Image (tube, rainbow, N blue to C red; front, side, top):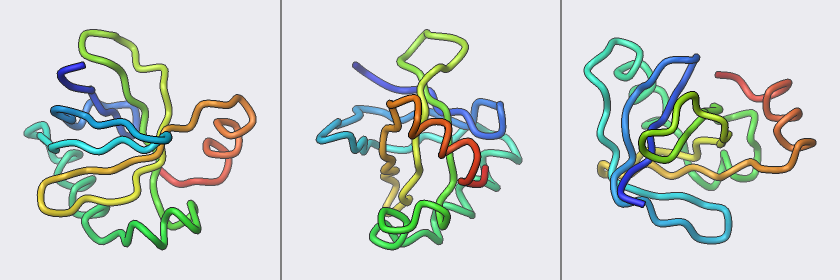
Length: 107
């Protein structure tokens, strides 16, 4: 997989190049879209502490993501942080976990 497309607040905000997936965590080089929403997303997630958000998901933000060329996105994730141009998020896959994410974690 060459890249993932990321969506926030129902809009595409950028791509994750060369994603590495390990134990449900995804990390890759962040390439933002040239939009105000992408800039807002970057400003927000660059303030996150990965350990804090991983322990308390309410401190994070949720996204939708898709493999390259797949629209609309149907997979969910919890963004843990953005550091040195790399974005890391945790995949959320079970129906119960997705329902909890959508109900409790802010966009």
